[in-house]
Image (tube, rainbow, N blue to C red):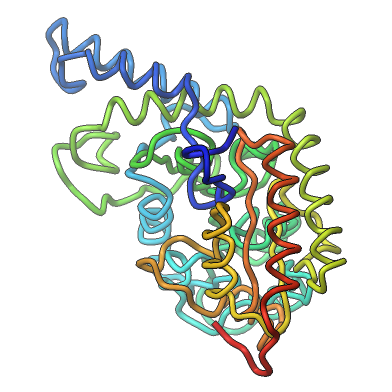
Length: 377
């Protein structure tokens, strides 16, 4: 069950997955280790062993070398560290549908996306070919609002043909679709533990060895993480992230099949109720759908569904609790529809009964809420 209690069903996994039991167990064990991983005595070596085992596991699962796995506090820090460390002397080109933590780094107009949410590769090539210094391109692997998956390998080939670097925000993709750093062709990749069932507060930046550039730390600290991220590592959170990653990757194929079938059922029912699914023609994460119900404000839908016992969202969960018109859907050309969209993201723990209950609640909400012309969030 994905319930928080008997009356509430959590369907907002892209904000944070429910923590996996394996992650909790690993966190408890790591919390009992008294030493600091930088200390040379026996307790310090025990802490260091936990840290380096987690590093080796994360690196292996996502195709990086262990020495180029830098632990951070989460996806935002990993993205900012990657951009700050690689942008010197470069234009920063950012996709129009990127997360706000990445969009803030843009030094030019955003790279457009197509109507289906996929990055416009022709526009990217024109921007790369324009006069100016070489670029650092930021392109997410899977979008947090729509689940749309970008063709990152093709993006990487374009970037490297023009002397550009590529940073990939894979926060939503990790543990949900298979990928490796070298397979993507990326120069750096960001992940975050709480998106695949680990604890909040742990993430990682993965760096490509063959294209490695020295990453200056945002926090100088005491030289931890090979001088690339200062501060004592959050050992329990890191151990929990690694444990969750192992389980998520092992269960990925089976879970994607199950969640994809249930997502399709939700979309079919929503379309029958008058909605449309954003990016439905593109490859997407199996657990994610963005549903536009014309004339019904997103906030009104969220409140109605919450009262019915279902927790969904209107997009990214990083806007201080605000419900705002989605820049992702605006970039896709939805206009006023961008203010009438909710995101349903199915967690690893969801059941068929949860899905059917939501379908019933959504149909009832759509029938009950009056449509309003020009409704926006």
